[in-house]
Amino acid sequence: TYIMVGEFFIINNDYKVEVISYKNNKEVTIKFENGFTKVVEKGVLLKGKIKNPYHPTLYNIGYIGEGKHKSYDNSKKLTKSYAVWADMLKRGYDDNYKQKHPTYKDVTVCEEWHNFQNFAEWFEENYNPKTMQGWCLDKDIICTECKIYSPENCCFIPQEINKLLLFKRNNKGLYPTGVSFSKQNKKFASTIKKYNK
Image (cartoon, rainbow, N blue to C red; front, side, top):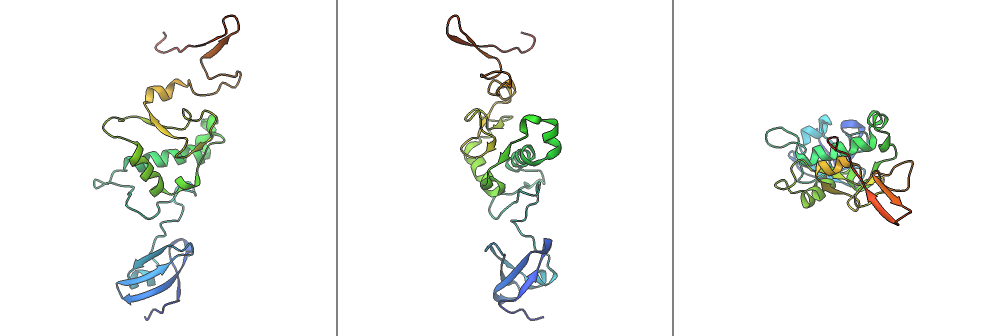
């Protein structure tokens, strides 16, 4: 079968791609509707067995994208960056999770981080596996009122701090949970109860 430049093909998930260059049977350049280009083999194209890296595969919003960051390592285990990314999207877009955790009702993820490559790049710059083992991705310390996971709002914190809820707003009061204001001496006080102490 001869392939012509300008010819269109339908691939996985009914995406339409256009042939923009044909060098030989192993080097056919195709262009997706969003402008992304990829070099594929002729036989694979004819069968339509091509994945669009921008197709939302996680909660109908997250996609892998094109770049160096992988979802699995050499031992076929999820990479740390992918696991954190997937968990973040779960908090933002999994309806069952939101029902069990109402505080995440209005939480979303910024559009930039719908692309795993973008999140993984930020993750590598901000997470140190030697000193941050077990630390959590948090969006509440930097901005206590924020409902969006984004590079500007997020950081990594120890799990113990994440569980304290000191940075969560109390529905009944003006101050974070555990914080009170004394009108008598005009000072704030913070208290916490852990291990029954």
